Amino acid sequence: MFMLVNCSNCRTPLQLPPGARSIRCAICQAVTQIADARNAPPPSHSHATPPPPGPPAPPSPYSHAPPGPLPNSHGRKKAVIVGISYRYSRHELKGCLNDAKCMKYLLMNKFQFPEASIIMLTEAETDPYKIPTKHNMRMALYWLVQGCQPGDSLVFHYSGHGSRQRNYNGDEVDGYDETLCPLDFETQGMIVDDEINASIVRPLPHGVRLHAIIDACHSGTVLDLPFLCRMDRSGKYVWEDHRPRSGVWKGSNGGEVISFSGCDDDQTSADTSALSKITSTGAMTFCFIQAIERGHGTTYGSILNAMRTAIRDAGGSGLDLGGSVVTSLLTMLVSGGSLSSGGFRQEPQLTACQPFDVYAKPFSL
Image (cartoon, rainbow, N blue to C red; front, top):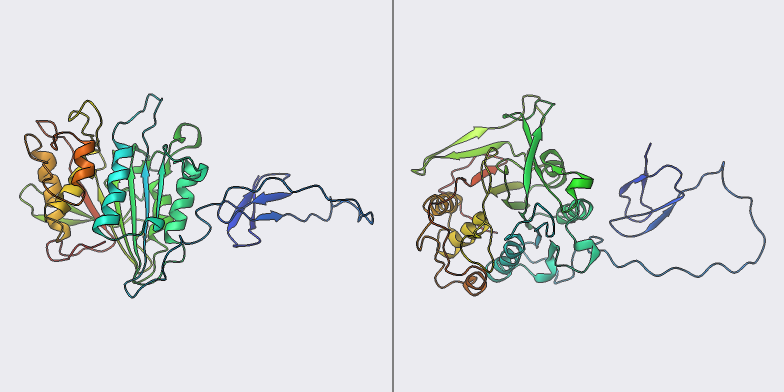
């Protein structure tokens, strides 16, 4: 049975394995010694030379806010970008690493996110803390909201496998929990929407904005937000109430949380591998970036409508990016700039903590 101890440095609760006498904090890397008077050795008066210290652990990117200028009057910008290809496995995806690269490029060049304030978790990273394992994804999400202040703008982008599993506590309208699949999900398990909600939604204080862009299967309500914008093909919409019958509040602590996802909870998401024999991207990420670059990023409704139209009517030059801040990267990654003819059977979704007029509310990151 595990016991909880607080880190001696940052006070983060840690699970101590049975019999362990010390534990290293995954957040700040401090080692906490566990005192046990019953098993403590008798005091020694010898002057033996202590053993030399071992090699220092590599620094963790999650121990503090990334370096950079002090927050300005508009607050800080921080982002966590996850792209998982599951390479060399039967679950391999083609476009997720490209999605991560494109999203980072967009955030830096279109929305002025400092590069030092963006944590990338992909299999291409050499830093062991930035491989998209379940543990590293959890720590990155913790870092994203840690110390946030009014005026801050946070972004979580995920491109990878999504799934769902039966819900037994009655807090899901459709009876299923939605999940994200870390690189090691087959051995360590998936990250369930309840945990995502508890990690980055409910702690968010007033004045902080969080946008999630989730390009995965079954991702419609993967942040467990209370309201879903149900939009038809004409662009008309209604807000569905997804608050659990248990009465548990799944919104924030006053902050604003809005999520774009690749498809409804019962749908799957596609990539654009039909475009090119060289490489591909996720269809949802591609359409999200295109909507912004084509001038449809003025409101949340215009973005969602443009994304749904592009995916539904994909073909020909439907996704030609034209001249834009990310054109050079996307056209290099996706030859031709359009989805395969015939479209995809997925409908991007919008969820939020509170209903709002999607065609009146300005979009900004």
